[in-house]
Image 1 (tube, rainbow, N blue to C red):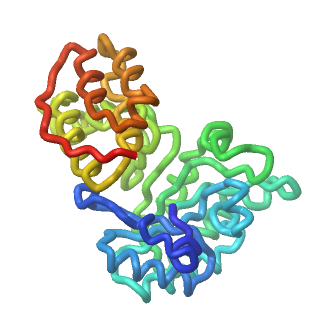
Image 2 (image 1 turned 180 degrees about the horizontal axis):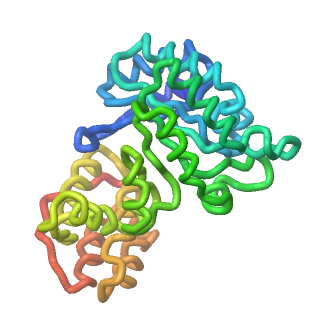
Amino acid sequence: MVTTGALLHGKQLHLLDFNDCEHPVALQLGGNDPAAMAECAAMAEALGYDEVNINVGCPSDRVQKGTFGACLMREPQLVAACVQAMQAACSIPVTVKTRTGIVLKNAPDLYSNLDFLLRLVDTLVEAGCQRLYLHARVAVLGGLSPAQNRDIPPLTPEKGEAIKLRHPDLELILNGGITRLTDALAPLRWADGIMIGRAAYHQPRFLSELEQHLYDTDFRLDESAIFDRYVAYMTTQLDQGVNLNVLTKHLLHCFNGRPGARRYRQILSDSKRLKANDFDLVYEAHSALGSHTAQPEVRLHAG
């Protein structure tokens, strides 16, 4: 998520950088002013994004102070106005990601029931929203941290199914608690898709398991080949001045469960060598697994 203020007032346009290999890639915007959201949506399209998304689900205190994220669920007409303004400013899909509701200390039930959620979705559909990402749990505003809000409120995917029954033409992508194959397959009986976040990051082989089950039974994951591809990508980023520690953290969860995986992670976490941009530690870590990879020529940048 990138806030409209960071782009329009802070001029932090580097936040919009991405690599071509990431396509299709969406920009999620945090904001509540239709004109500002529209300007940023046009910016996203001009920079080659494939989709622009409105954050109506983040529960953090900082986001609440900016009056966007999950607290926007209380203002469906404002979200609808943002959708329409953004659609007028760009031709790429304008989508919304939200929760099933919000829980407030002084009104725990007012914005957390199914009727409220259906009214919100009705308003978004009327505004022209054609794709909705639904994190299938409420956001508790006050009392829970963002991390706790990802786990403590119970999952209610049946609310997503109710939305799909009411709006069969709305593309609905379900999110939340999908960490195993069975978790992924159940909602696909009625949802148009699923969104997987941290599980894919912490269990890199999970997506491969889904690929094999859903699309290609002959698919096999070669983690060493993927490692080699990422190392080649790392060399291009190092050449552009990206620090090594920014790149190696994304390798830490690879090879989980393999002999030598603990030593692999220890080597990749050597703060002194990372600070010195010592690229040799990447190959040393891989060698701890008893496998080897060809070492491409690397030009390093200190600092």
